[in-house]
Image (cartoon, one colour):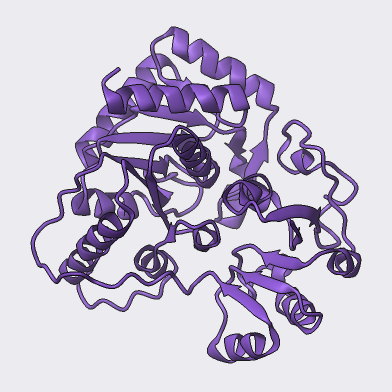
Length: 366
């Protein structure tokens, strides 16, 4: 068992604490280290997102963590613009000099990659996706033989990464082969598919000259994944948001969801959405809008405990959120289910299992 530290830790990295040891059981997450100034040190990991305690305390001494660990994982983030990541490359270099295994999810420049790769005995760079040899070349449309499930966000990032991982864990637990495709580079640390095609499109590094060329490339990519992994189900975690947030901030307004829905039609969609006081009729209206635009609606819903902080979002022009108590969200989800709205709060193990069983029942016709 190898001990691993995650730095810099934030709520964005919480799913890695929980799921990395599940999908990579040779690693134990022993330290979560937050930069000074974020206010997370000294608190349980659940405190960062106003959730229940998970039993490990965040601290801010990265040198102590490296002394006690065999590996360092740096989650995805911007090394240039995010203050929490300003010293992340230096920390990775220090870990490499000490002979630690380094998991690097931020995108590096060519010179940074060469330097870190030359120093590290074991470097796992998330933007180097596993290569599968193409068995054939085709230009025909892709029709998957396994059911496809979209996991996407309604108006902001609402735990879609965590929900996708929890579903993948349960499919594997029950003996089902599952292929996971998404735009979080950390998927490549978990034995899944952090799709370079999605990441390059989403993070502004698109190399294709036209949309048809991109669609053809993604068709071929999906064929190769299915050929090599032979899944019983395919989970596609789509980046961005499906619906714009008018007068608050720009988001992707469904561009990525629309593009993926043209490439492959999902059998079901799980929509991750922030807490809101919508009525059942409003949910039916959203379902109709999504089906009209994308061909997939609110088949199942995950309610996050995030809510949009309207004033801060309006002031900054960026997504700004607050975290509500998870118990409040749980009660809201249960109330909606009584009104035949398939909503769950998949922050809680019991609700995760119910969400999975509901999806499994749909896929198997049970």
